[in-house]
Structure formats: structure tokens, C-alpha cells
Image 1 (tube, rainbow, N blue to C red):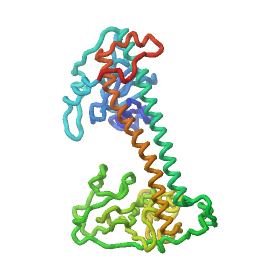
Image 2: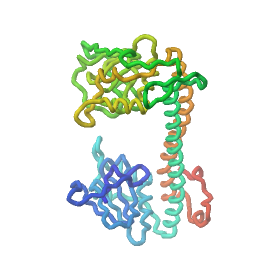
Image 3: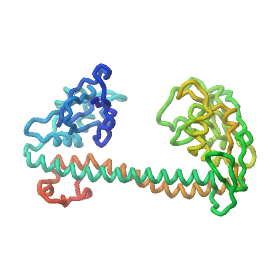
Image 4: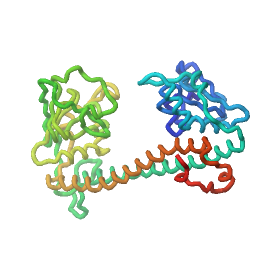
Length: 396
């Protein structure tokens, strides 16, 4: 089993380790690990990739980007794991790391770092027991919040998908849509081919000085400097496509992911994008949400063209031929207002849950530091069924 730095998450959990034959393993797969070791990354130290190896499998190998800390017989193995997560040790690692973009520390330097420990094995055992219990509570809290967020996202998607395909009125007459996957739709809605809803715009920039916009699945079509994950950019944007506010922009290579986005401001986009402008009597936000419906994404996947996955494109003729729901303009507006109102409530709960997760994650290191440095004596507490100490009572 091979463990790379990317396999260790911020909670010290080893996720998705690879099982490889030695001959197929990367050259850095050389660090032999045994049960009870603590591994700590010596490269990209800002990741704080630290894990305790509880697995008793004999064939665990880690990247040489890890240092392996093996406890002596008088030291509880997991006590070492908690020690190296304290503020004191982490700050020493940071101050002794070299490099700006790719900070690293040598295993030799790591081994010279000093930290105060207790030799009392009873106290070590109590510290491990206490922290195991408290961190399990924190991890369960995070898991519950993450599950809540996923459920809320599913609820949000259901609200959007239902509203854009069936409307928000429950008692209107219905009719067959003529679209196999959809079934019935409100009787007063139309079904049009996309070419009767949009026209493609192919205006080009003479200077390349307009605001450069890029597509992000999370943010939509935004200023390129707002996207963290940068891609290679041309030296000049002369000849890039121009778009106006409320144009619908498609990343042709990402149509299979539903990457349609409304331009919120005017600017320029890559020549590989397609820019569509609505014909009269339509709300672009409605179609932006409609084309993110899973069934429309499946439709795009059926008509993309190319040689291999990753280079499949949705070309304008195929897009123009797609049958598109078309409620009356006033109803499109009502649907968007309804979606915005309903999803705003859900987004508020999601944001609060995400903030709670961040706060509790930030609390892990101060909690560990408070215990391993002896600010709280946990020996008596661990003898009781309930520790009697809440997370909020730990000094930080």
C-alpha cells in the first residue's frame, strides 16, 4: 500500500491509498512504514500532512516526502502523533522550512527540532485517551455537517430542476412535452428549438483590453483574476470574443458538464467559447438554470463531437437543434424570483454550516496543544465515563 502526501487530509486521515506493485510504483515510493509510526510531510509543509499508522499491514510504503517518526518503548505511539500537531512543533517546522512556493524541511532538520514531553506513561495514556475521545466528537460533528450540506444541495437542485421544467403553479392544465425524458409540461408552455431562442454572436476585440472573463463551475462567468486555478493565457487577447451583460456563454469543451453561464458584465472571452444572445421575450437566467438540468446535460453529451473525452465539443448546429422549454416571459421571471427566494434560504443554512466546520477545524490544533503542553491535566477526567470537560472549557 502506497501513501502519497495527497492521500493525507487535514484531519490526519489516509484517504484512498494506492495498492501498487513495486515495479509500477513511483520512484519516491521508498519510505517503509510500520504500525505505530507517525508520518509527517517534509515537503509542502503548509499542508500539515500528518498521519498515525494504525494498520498492522507489513507492506506499507510512503513517499520520501514524508519523515517517519517511530516511538521508543517508553513512549505511547499516538502520543507522538499528537505532539507533532501542537502549535509549538508546527511553528518550528514552518520557521525551519525553506522555499516560498514549495516549502520543505529535511528529515535531518526535522529530527533536531525540540519539544517538551512528559515521561509519565500514565499521563501519556490519559492524553491519548482524552484526545481520541474529543477529536472523535469533532470529526463526527464535521461529518454530520457535511452530510447536512449535501442534503441541502440536493434539495436546492430539486427546487431548481422542478421549477424550470414544470413551473411553480401546481394546478395548471398539462400537456405532453414531446420530450421523452420530461413527460408533461404546463399546457401554455412552448417547446422551441434553441435556434429560435438564441442567436450566436461572433464579435471580436480589436485591442484585447476589455475585461477578460473565464468560466468556473463554482462561480460562473467571472473576471479571470477571481479564479484561483489559473490556466495558460495568451500573451494578447486581441481577437478574443466579445460578450455583453446577459449573453449566455458556453465553454464548448465543458458542455458535457453543463457549463453554460450568464455574463453579468460585458467583457471578452476565449475564442473557444460560444456566445449566444437571446431573441426577444426571454430571461437568460431561466435558460442558464434550465441547461444545467441533468437531463439537458445528458442531451448535450449525446450530441457533442470529438475524438476523445476531454476534447468533445458542443458545436452551434447541434446546440441549435436541441428542443428547449419556453414558458411565457412573465412566467420565466416569476420562476427565477421563486428560485432565488427559495435557494437563498438554503444557501444561508449551507454558509452557516460551512462556517461552523471551518471554526471547529481551526479548533483542533489549539485543543491538541492545550492538552499535550499540560495546560489541562486530563488524568482524572479520563477515568470517568464522561470526561467532564467540554471543548469550550479548554484554554487556547
